[in-house]
Length: 293
Image 1: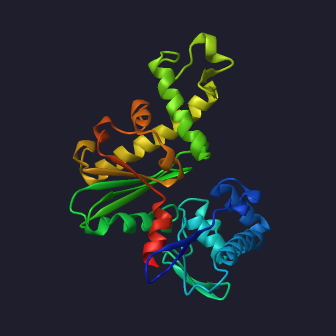
Image 2: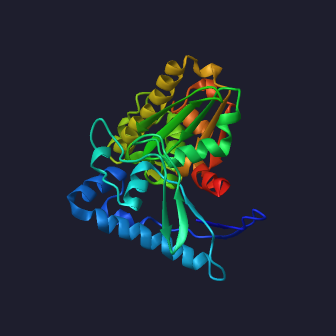
Image 3: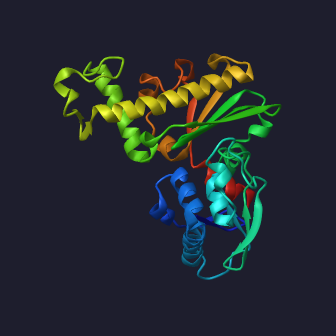
């Protein structure tokens, strides 16, 4: 959470917190299940209390005029108290993706609009931050997390996709370290190109620096990176371009901030054509909310 001087753009304070809703699941699918099982009001109360605490800690001297919130569709639904049952099952229908207005701490609060059940306001904020609506060149935004959301396009046309990357990306710093470690294991030929560790490491794992990499972790990473790569290629194909025709690739999200790009290329998370085209852009969701405000 940023406290911003709306006249000067000065950042006057930052509040960072873990999401207290993790009591009811570490991922959005678990929280959907718990909300459907009667915990919806509790999930809503937890996040509202957390936001209120942040506002109180940041805004001690004067009351803000506006709060802008950017997040994925499930988080927005839980915040607003919407029905989330349609988000967890096919055809994955959201109750509302058009944004919303409410009050928190008596302050006018705007929830950034999304696009679909798994392309939320965080992605829209990223597109806004990066100026996709003004770009002529074909660009690709990849927001890396448990779900890898991607948007390809320019000012004329955009396509979006969400790929289930799974638990390998849940812990952002560790996820990036795992990618770096697996790339080194491959370079040192301690695993073959299928990802199978050599016999002497297969049972107990392989130590890379201070990181112990086990076979099951490599398998989880393979599924995650395959989901990302497949999503990129499918999105490019549907848009009518090859990976070599994409002019710029933006890597956003918690994992993206720490990602070692050469290692990600080496393990095949991204097409080799993306080399020298990628830029890590950090938390574009928060930046978009700030720019909107």
